[in-house]
Amino acid sequence: MDFHLSEESKFYSQQYQIPLEVPQLDTEQDFSDKPIILIRHGFSMQNFQEKEITYKNPSWEYSKTEGLEEMFTSEKYIDSSLHEIGIFQCIQQQKSINKFKFYTVFISPLRRTIQTCIYLFATHPDRQNIKFVLLPQLAECLCSSGCFSAFTLSQTRKEMEALAQKYQISLDYSRVSELGESWQIKVLENDQIVKNILEKLERNGECGYRQPYHKIILDEIKQTKNYLIESWEMLYKKSKRAQEIIKHFLESAKQQQIQNGQDDSEYKVGIVSHGYLMKCMTASRIEDNGSVQEGIVLQNVQILPYSFD
Image (cartoon, rainbow, N blue to C red; front, side):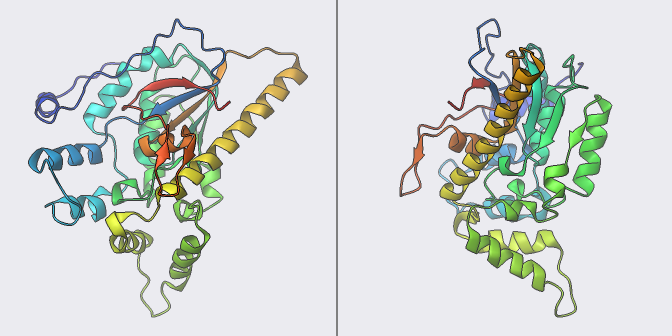
């Protein structure tokens, strides 16, 4: 797949110390005991904005740093897409990902993770037979406009399906469609927060004016401390919910193999998600103060064979 990084991106990668190279996996190793392949999304536009703000304000604070509130709450940063550098990173990892066979790849429904999956699997020899499933519980912490997927089932879906079709990849939106537009609220692991926000959505329009869904959620983000609707504890619980869904899928797949007399032990399940979510998913526990213990922090487009056992 032919792709050339612009001179502008090369310049900023040096100025902001953005790594263009991604951690390479030794695909000659035996990963037969690792049925899961974890993949973090590529470098995103929000990641770039964070680098730019940090470069200008090395010791920034949430309430005082210029540009920070806009980055976390502005409509223009909703559901951050991949930066050109992120696409470049994905293409670097194509040879490594092509070495693995997959049953299914579960993807966070946010734009940057879908884009990462498409560009990463764009040359996979079996991509037309792999099931690419958007799993709501793999979404990143709802902590900024960049992590808020407001248009998943409308304009974003059209854009992502068009990109996927370009590389003969089919995306399964069924799990998101079942939850509807407010899917990202409904998977939050706090019943009271979910209830409060859904009630606001239900009351929307009672006074004659119906406010767009995305504006209501952005207002919620603005009103929280440090823009966090979703706490570490909530994210940890959500990640474990996703883990249970995927473990159940693996168990069902193994049972199907046994019934069919097949040995598909080489086949993997892919997970394309986010740094915080996968840190929680791989963590051993979470402390009372919200500190996540022993979770793995992946770099952009790092590929990590893994086992939940």
